[in-house]
Length: 103
Image 1 (cartoon, rainbow, N blue to C red):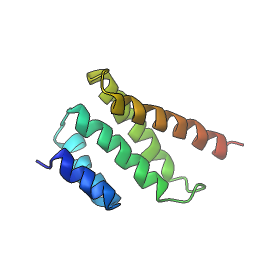
Image 2 (cartoon, rainbow, N blue to C red):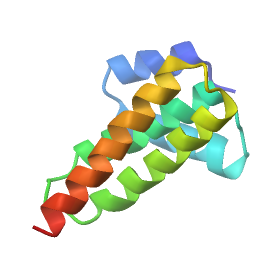
Image 3 (tube, rainbow, N blue to C red):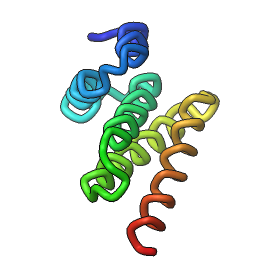
Image 4 (cartoon, one colour):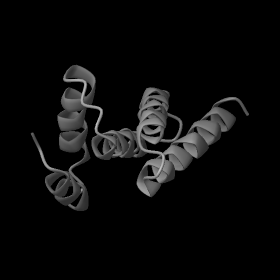
């Protein structure tokens, strides 16, 4: 299994697709519920969305999925500030995305 340090190093190197693919497999296919992995997967979804144009409708699934996993991380470890941070960022992104699309 990949370590959080390895994931953070990849994030520093802006290897967002590699992080997303790794965590997608770990979280969604292997059902890993470690909050440290969940908030990083939420962040990976956010990063993938940020790589797309604001008007690109394929951003929405990344934002929605990221919020879902951040919410799960908060449910499991409500004392983890990074879980809350990514929940807030993704909730805000969801609202902004919907406002942009429907304005």
